[in-house]
Length: 431
Ligand SMILES: [Zn+2]
Image 1 (spheres, rainbow, N blue to C red):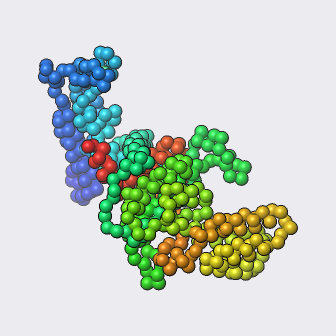
Image 2: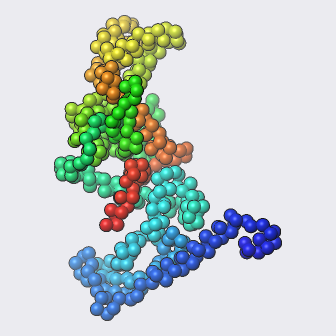
Image 3: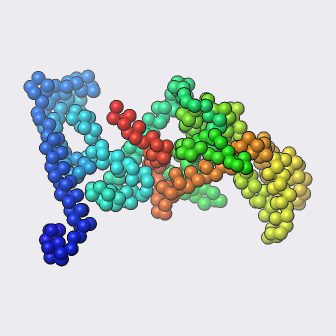
């Protein structure tokens, strides 16, 4: 057909030609694969095999099923065994081919996992059509990506259990001058049933669930002016919707994998949220704790706006004095200054008290000049960027509503991919 068009117009439509050629190659490849996937009936002495129930399953017949492969739709025909005691059937060839309970070949599942963690599932479906010339549905992308993510999540839980029993292999390697853990949380939109009984913000019903996010990176050198520099490609991520207790174990395991035990200097950075510092105390005792400077400044700004309603010049003047105290790590005096502010307005008095308490609680986490002299980061920019790139860009698109289960599966898959561990985890699954 393409050749006819060429004869008529005298012009090569290369794109049409190459696509038609690929389709033809796929059809030939799928036919060849189908021929390869015709398993013979077992020999007479191989017609029984053990069943999980303890009895014997017997060969019944050859059964075929469609398998979508990297070269298109093929078909496998393989022996079927049935156990007369428990009535469970099995296809040993499916185990060998890695197509148990699925009509997608391993190569196609890997592709679906890749596009499914990257972008909305329908976008993935379109990419698969264009790039691989394979017809799948949006649901196919979703189910496959979620199933593979779920496998990864289950594997991680097993690792976390081993970590709890202090049964982790020692991670050997070069000494690490500075290992840094940053922790934060970001909300993603969820389906209604995931927020039943949960309090939303400002009296509105909850529409979001918090994803707890952590990252781990190393530092070896610093910039000309002494500023902290992150080692290139040294950042790995964890993320899940779960309790702080569960997340504490997850981030501990990640830090352990990255060489926490042999780091010369250990740092935890977060905003002022109490759960973060509980994790730091429990999982990373002895680490230097740093409250993100920009969050701390924000607390001062919030108070400045309440002290001087709509008086921007006054707000700025007040900030200059108090932000200097903060930036200089002079937090004790900052707390004294805050506590000395008088207000007859009970709401304002409460805001002053809360702010003073925040700085008092976090005093030792705000020694910014000291941190800077050690070339440590004083901001949580790395984790905030991670909240956007790892979580936001995938999970916060408009019209997207997640179940906790699905979100956690996709987040496990996505972090695994970001951390450069997907290939290993895929190979390990086969072994
Ligand atoms: Zn059985």
